[in-house]
Each structure stands twice: as C-alpha cells, then as structure tokens.
Amino acid sequence: MECTVNWTGGLGTRSGMGFVAETGSGHVLTMDGAPDAQQPALGGQNLAPRPLETLLAGTGGCTAYDVVLILRRGRHDVRGCSVKLTAERAETEPKVFTKIHMHFTVTGHHIPDAAVERAIALSHEKYCSASVMLGKTAQITTGFEVVAA
Image (tube, rainbow, N blue to C red; front, top):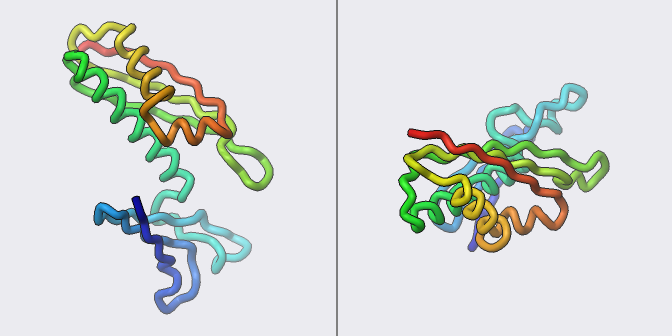
C-alpha cells in the first residue's frame, strides 16, 4: 500500500497548510489545517478535513465495511449502516486519540441485535486494522441500534 502527499502551499504562495494525497489505488484526498488567526501563513484555510479527521473517518469506514460484510455473509437483510465516531485527544503533544466511541445504526429487516453485536466485535477484534491500531493508544467503546426498514 502506498500514498503520496503533496503540500499545495508550495504552488507559488508558500502559505497555507493544504495537502493533496494520491492513494496507490489512484484516488485523491484533500486535507487542510485549521486557520491560525495569529500567524495566518502558518495555518490552513479550512477548505478540507484535517489529517486526523481523515484518520478517524477512515477508521469509521473500515469498521462499517466489516460490519456490513459480516452481516451480509450471515444472510441478514441489511439496508443501511452508519457509524458516528466521537473522539478525545491527549492534551499534550503528541495529541493522540485517547478515547473513541463508535455508535452504529444498522437498518434492515429482522436483523437480530446479537448478529450486529457479533459483527461489531469481530470487526474490532479481528478485521478492522485501523481500529486495532488506534486501540493501542485509545480506549475504544461501541454501541449500536437496529432500525427496522
């Protein structure tokens, strides 16, 4: 797996904290920093997600992918799946994630709570590389609800 990240501030202005990442699969992702009122040239322009937001979003995508796949393989009629992630970070550098809560909402027909609970557990214990990595620094908790479609 590979990815190339380029600073967009180097395109003539030498300011800003925007970056464009090109993934090994040929997709592009933009990232930006938060504006810095005291030193504008050192801050971002708030034009894209922050790099750590993309890390959190990628983790959500990784685990949601697993949950849907596990439920479908179990022949459950899944119609939707979303996960809301809330995270806390350390107060000092490096400001790693220290707590992450993931709340899943799974929509479908006659999906047992036990099947969703099992899918989430399998994702976090075995399949989702991102949450396993983040679990080295953060306490990860989960919750879920099943909504009838």
